[in-house]
Image (cartoon, rainbow, N blue to C red; front, side, top):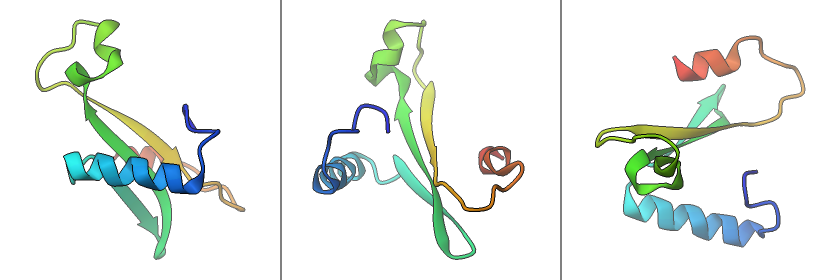
Length: 83
């Protein structure tokens, strides 16, 4: 996924360990029927590159959403995750 296609599983694991060490609420994993289905990364906009592209203010947050592939699509799943 974004910018990590060439990284090993260990490198991705280390990235998330470091991210969680900075803020335990920055990465959330959601499950459906006991299985991990999605990952959400939350970040403060002022601390990220996105702040160079709009007038970010204190308290502005952004997020990345990764949804696992499924063998049977679930209609409205992304909308349900955001809700």
